[in-house]
Amino acid sequence: MVNGFKVPKPLDKFQKDEYYVADVTDELFYSACTNRGDKDDKSWLSRNIVHATKEAAIAHAKAMLGIYPSIP
Image (cartoon, rainbow, N blue to C red; front, side, top):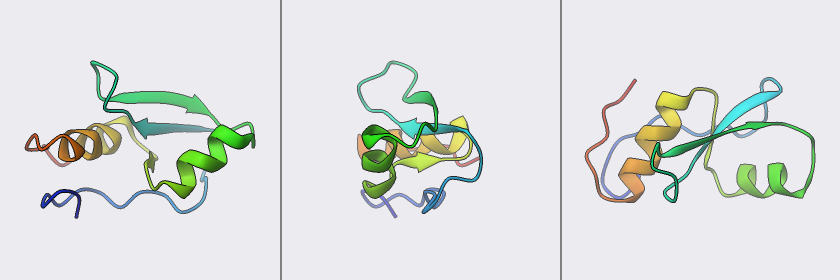
């Protein structure tokens, strides 16, 4: 649950090299990233905003903003 909305569970570890971050600052509501094992990857993972699909990241970002997310 995020802000009262049910959203897909964020990843707790990376499943593959490419992942998606719920990004409330981007007009698309997500950022596509490549896991390099750097501080940014670790930071986003610890903040529970990393998803395996862009649709899940979008739903998460919209929920953070109080916008009803469509769940993939």
